[in-house]
Amino acid sequence: MTETDDLVDLVVSTDELDSALTERSIRAVRDWIGAAIRGATGDTGDVLRAYAMASPADGSAMTFDGTTAGPERACLLNGAFGHTLDFDDTFSAFPLHPTTVVTPAALSAGELADADGEAFLRAYAVGVEVLHRVGKSVFPTQYGRGFHSTAAVGPIGAAATAAVVLDLDEDELRNAIGIAASSAGGLRKNFGTTTKPLHAGFAASAGLRAALLAREGATAHENALGGESGYGEAMAGEAFDPSELVGDELSGVADIALKLFASAHITHGSMEALRRLRERERLSPESVASMTATMHPGGREVLIHSDPDDALEAKFSIEFCLAAVLRSGKAGLEEFTDEYVTAPETRETMETVEAVYDEAAIEGLGRYGGRVTVETTDGETFEAAAAAPGSPDNPASESRLRGKFDSCVAPTSVDAEPLAAAIEGLAEGGSVSDVFDAL
Image: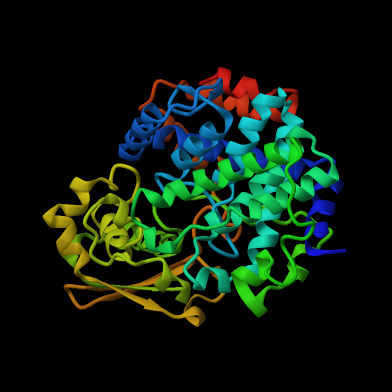
């Protein structure tokens, strides 16, 4: 079997989900939809709406700002809306945002096919698994070369998702994977700009487009993933590991880490550790002389804005993230505003933060874990360590996750209760149209 055949076999052999996988999938989809609805209301949402008006793509597919568009355009907008706040999930093992890529593809394809909840959830889980396997096969080399994994792997997972919903045959699926592989891209250089959330939208729409093209007869190389000049070699060279594409278990959904802070995931363990210290020791900006955050070395490639100018850049600044937690006890959507980022109190507190990257110091805490050491103005030293909340190593409670969903939806015109019920009903005979009817 070729590398592409391995993925085709995975997709066609997954015919049902067990209850645990179904529950995890619903929780992740609900979490993402809340973030997408809120993301559609912000500045980036305004940019995307202006673009949509200037370049019409009419259709009946629903978008999370309450309008409609053609299926591909809806994928682009919804994927970007869901990633705008950086409040959407990632894999725990490596930095890729799965749900904001595969869910828009499943929703748009689901509207085209009038899909039921079972088909939607199976497509979601399969797409996440494809992202997990392909992502691991090229990580960390692909990421180290400057690619954003969400955009560089995403189209392939979105294509697999759409293929399940659209019921493509094996040859069409193989072609869809090949077409999607030719859409891979996305540069980490653009972190902290509007382009980063667009990466998710580009990936989702490219995957759906690949599946629709394949359904109508478009072709690709039978093994676009492997061999000379294939996806794996192009993205990772000799480091490409095709053995990651093979497996008997669906482990992707179980590796999803849900976010409880609206920033780069690498900051979350340190933020949680400081949150606990602040509460336990009654710390304040006035009582703290210095803070040191110790994180995984991968943070060097992500935390590229030590002196952020705005809220987008602040999501990639450990200096800001710890300053916000120390000032406010949290770092939620209210803190990630340009006004909060540039406030004198925030800037002064940021100056007390130092970043250290040492994998051994966070052993056992996962890739997004962190250790924080605080020196007070009275000469005392306090230290705490934590895995990222919401990760497999530190699962979040249902009440905390539902609270996040409710808080995201609250400022909008959407009623959280019927929407949550529609999402949860996908496993109980509901359909994709039920979810959009609840918006």
